[in-house]
Length: 103
Length: 286
Image 1 (cartoon, one colour):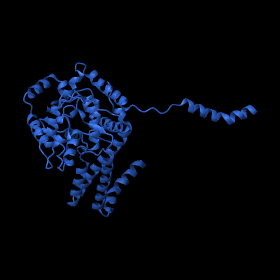
Image 2: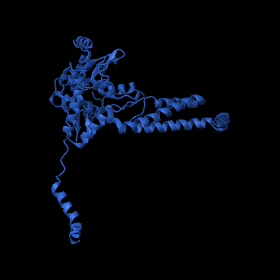
Image 3: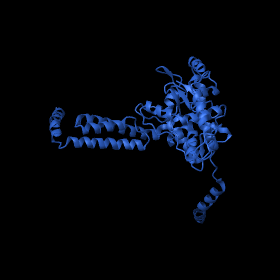
Image 4: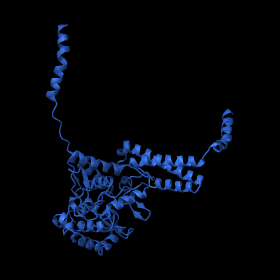
């Protein structure tokens, strides 16, 4: 019961907390920066994914047009791609020899 | 007591001396032997997977595996779509630069040098490909380099490949630096990348010969013997790096620039895996 109440109170606070954010556009810009940092890290490892840069480009364009939600969605996708590409690179660096097929 | 003191004093020195006497000087690593063992294993994979296909036939790519595709291809080869490119390549190869020299000045044996490339240049400590050598010749003679993936570079490469047909693939690895480049290429070949989390080997070893939509996936063995290729999909002739970039795009990975270290090392590895086959480029492909 306690857990349910605490979850409900958390959900109730969520709109309030987003209203408290002083600058939603600023948060979107920060999200884009995070995505760009992840993309650069993946690129440095040689594992950048094909669409990450274009997602970031589109997120920036949407933000310039004031389409904050659209921008956030695109930047979140780019951030996820960047992080997954880095994880892929780190895994492959250690385990690529396990990928050699045998018959 | 006396005895144990003597032992304590002299035992370490005695052990050290015996170690020096027993140990031999470090043997030089035979990198070629390591690579040859890999090539043998790699080729054995395909020979076991497709026991009816002869090793030499892998130079024909996917047409080694599928009889119907092979018949269509053989008919196409009667009037090969790359014929005009070979002719254009010959003209470009002999066309004088502004300084009076030409590409022919850079390449011995009348340009029949396909079998020499790729190789590991020990002084430069990097893999040199045929396309790289062509453009370096132009730049050294004050000309602009050709674009890397198609057009004149692919045409000159096609001409050189054509007059080199029958040369044996025999790439050597004679140093630690060359072996490092080979291992970079090997890692690239087997590591999964991109949004689809796929590798070169995933498609061209594990799924070789299987259907991918309307196409049959080509075997990795022999991949580099027949480039550049005239692809029906491209409607023109293109280089191996163009194909590498296309493959990377297909699996959702950002392609590397043409003739990047990554792609040159990959070509080095793949060509070594085809050691013993014959160069038979240029070729036509779907």
